[in-house]
Length: 200
Image (cartoon, rainbow, N blue to C red; front, side, top):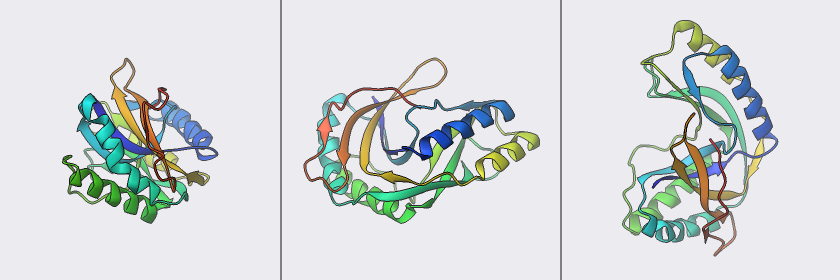
């Protein structure tokens, strides 16, 4: 299965992010915007994760979550991967909580590498994916509308858990289904088979 680790966007930021997405859907065409549910900041991307290694992955990152205290996150500022005029992923960054997320990502990477999982060597960049252009690049008008809308600073929220999501292909874009979670500062709180749900 395709899987990744993330920090869920929760209230009050979630409602503001959903409103932002509604505005973007109205103002910016030719972008496949994500679903409202399950908005998150990506901590680690597995790519393909064999189902029989799910428990091992959860166990590998549980100490990282246990060593992390809940912290404030504020989403702010538009960005894209890669940079420049050939955007493949449009995201909103963070103005608070970046150091804590980077530290969490580093601990997760270390735990996964020690357990034999492949890890990326690229520097961590805190981001919440909002959409993917359907073509090779945004028009100038679309880029301007995107940057203006995504420039707003959203309300802060408290990050208190790490979630392992499965990305399930579906019409209209993938569903992000929680498969396991580990609460911050709670040793031994990782639980494989966390209640399934859908998101974006």
